Length: 135
Picture 1: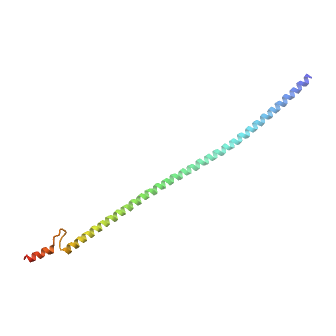
Picture 2: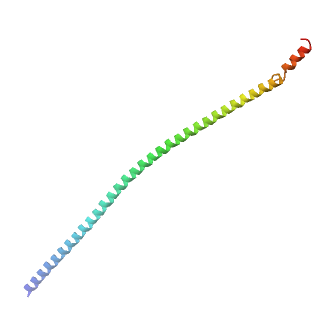
Picture 3: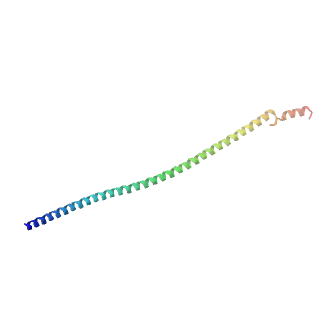
C-alpha cells in the first residue's frame, strides 16, 4: 500500500507539474499575443505620429509661404497707395497751377479792362490826364 500511495502521489505530482507547465505556456502565449498587439498598436501610433509631423511641416511651410505672399501683397498695396497719393498731389499741384494761371489771366484781363496795373494805377487815365494837361 505504501507503494501504491507513493505511485499515486508521483502521478499526482506529474499531473500537477504538467498542468502547471500547461498553464504557464498558456500564460506565456497570452502575454506574447498581448505584446504583439501592443507592438502593432505602437507601430500604428508611431506611423500616425510621423504622418502628422510631416503634415504639420507641410502646413507650416504653407503658412510661411502665405505669410510671405501676404507681406508682398501688403508692400504692393503700400506702393500703390503711395503712387495714388503722389498722383493726387500732382493733380492738386496741377489744379493749383491752373488756378494761379487763371488768377493771373483774370488779373491781366482786369488790368487791361481798367487800363492799369494791380495797384490800381490806371495808364489810360494817366495818359488822358497827360494829354489834357498838355503833356
